[in-house]
Amino acid sequence: MVDLAVLPSYVAVIMLFLAPPGPDMAYMLAVGLEGGRLSALRAILGIGTGMGVYAIAVVAGMGEIARSHPSVLDSVRILGAAYLLWLAYVTMRSARRAINGYEDLATGRWYLRGVLVSLTNPKIILFYLAVLPQFIGSAENPELQMTILGAINILMEVVLYGCIGVLAGFFQARLIGSTKATAVLNYAACAVYLVLATAITGEILLA
Image (cartoon, rainbow, N blue to C red):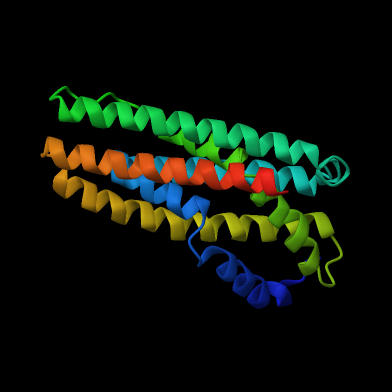
């Protein structure tokens, strides 16, 4: 019913996509630095949920909308850049409060943040549109084959980037008692959000 012979080459392709530093990796690093280990775990579960939504959409055939109306992806990019700018503002506000000796604002909702960041990253659906169909192989049930491939991709990203976020969270936990160190970590996270927003905006302008 499904073709499992394609899995080794498919996993290799995923690793080629995940290994270089990218938006999701940078975002998880920022979350770990800003919120710590538990925040990173919640955020990566949110990212996995968003990826699952895109995977289901592609399997259901909604990817044709993205092919026929590329402006939809541009709109998603704009929303993603705007959301990252908002995260940068919230993080900078937390850093300033730490410097001034106030208790840090609970930015919270890390899972929801992860979902939104994932859903506003059109590269995920582009990956599914471009890569998944290449590994259908001799499967008798293409929909089931693509579902399995999508689940494998989600699991690999959750594990890899989740570990990166948790490791950043360990670093954050060692410095959490210092208000200056907390402020520095928040400013670092803010810088990551700004760089990501700038990169996305640059892609839109150059497209």
